[in-house]
Amino acid sequence: MWKYIVHDLTAALRYLPYGVIAGLLTAIVLTGVNSSRRKQGKNTMSLLPVSCLVMYVEILLVITYFSREMGSRNGLDLQLFSTWGINQRNNAFVVENVLLFIPYGFILAWAIVRQRRFMVNLLTGALTSIAVECMQLVTGRGFFQIDDIVTNILGTILGYLCFRLVFRRLDKHASS
Image (cartoon, rainbow, N blue to C red; front, side):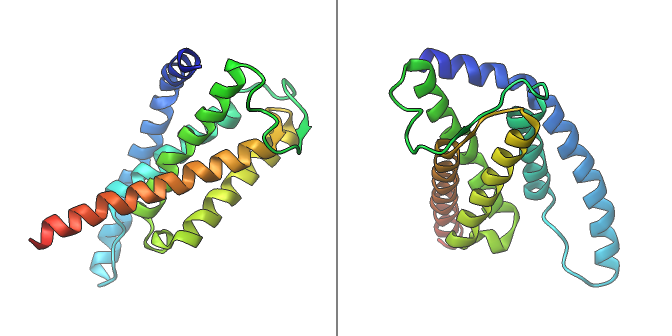
């Protein structure tokens, strides 16, 4: 199983340039927007976290949607935990779905203050996962699987918890 995970994660690195371009474009646009907002005496948006969020969403969309040919896959699987235990490849897919959404849960909370509330972050991760699964189903670019939604939500939760741990430590370090 780990052999598949390492292979798939390495293969996903080829999508990094798409995310970097999206992140850089976002940083350029945000720099201009923030300059204008500063002149008006308004709060500015955090450049690095928001750019990272856009970068990651771009990578997420390429991995789950745009890297697949339209009509290449279709199907609906509403049976919970039907993916796990079939074979090592499917087990790897389950773990990869969790791993895919860990950065998403983390970066959401880092970039958007409202996402620092657990339920808001959880709901955003769930809605994002459902939207991806529905897009895959409608276009035939992937299978709609309940397992994917559950594992993506788990990844979002783990990412959120990582955010809480990291920033709690940073807050304690900064206050001492």
